[in-house]
Length: 106
Length: 437
Image (cartoon, rainbow over all chains, first blue to last red; front, side):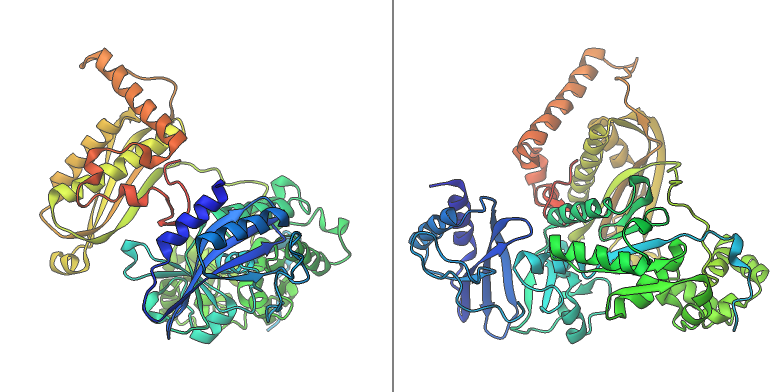
């Protein structure tokens, strides 16, 4: 296990409380300004505000690395992952599109 | 009314005052791949002493939608809405972004013409350099906006003036509401742009108390202020009266190249306690912790303190009962950076004044700072012991520098009431940083 994966999984476990009426998901953002991938843990309790807590910033700006990391995270948790800022990019190994829908304000 | 003053002898420069639109909220939006101007996002600090949560920043749309106008709003003022994103603050990230922004400014002005004014505002004296980048100041302002948008994803608001105060008013009153986020004031537009302002406390340097004072004098608009007798203003308000009069005429003779020298630097920390404290031992624990934090910072800056002050603020109920809001005492001490000495002085000051009131605020400040050129031994105690104590503190500092504050703490901080461990990673009382440097 590498350090990025360790940190992300550990923080997910701390935050994923499985509360009633609450939706949880992960968010991965391609940040072209800092050249990083930013990870967030989002949750939304029904009729409440959405909360978005930063999990980690991956500084290795390389899709091959990210693809492996995401695969490993998915072995650890089944939370759905929302990608942001990846429009038009493909995973290098599986050749699948990363983000299908554009965000509304792009 | 015409501008019947000959401003030809006043400084005519090109000053930009640049501020980030909802800085913290914008940084967080960009980190999430969102557009800072279109999202509903608030940055909320949820420390124990914030009584449920303080809203540190709001994105422009959220500001409008939820009518959040105060500088810092409370969690209870914010409705529950699924469309709204709430994020915790990351102070170190904002400091980093501020440095990146100022680095961009340095491409447009010389170092001595740049003056970072706060975490999200900087003053640029473009007088000597704007012609290198465009024909008109406004054109250069647009170039700066585009550069920052392209490289950092953030939007900046720019006030342009012939001196810093014009730029500041242009920013606060006009640029923030303009389509292109640029406002401009010149001497000849002062009557149409400053005198027309009817809400006095929207102008920089006029707070609600000064505004109320002016109202009592029969001054209700900036126009009234500009045409009031300046001698009357000075007689009523002292030098501030003269300054306000100059402000109303858009006059500012300061030069940002000539930095104001800090006559007396001071160093200190304060905190709002997470709940009311009654117990003497608990209160003294926190005083000791703050004292140690301040002395650690003194050592970090290689300074000795010659004056020490302690301020205690009572809880709301206790101050109603007591009639005072708290107490404050300063004492002169032999210059020192030793934990033991400073904490014992603080404890004595506290015991001398405290009469059992419930307290909510503690502040410790040191001043009369002198450079630490070596340890001054005291004739009346064992020199070996003194050297050993100083070395002990140096080692604790070294361990904390390397492994963080939590690596080594006094047992007393674990006892009920201590706040140091929880606050070690906060900046300005909010998430994200190291408060012991």
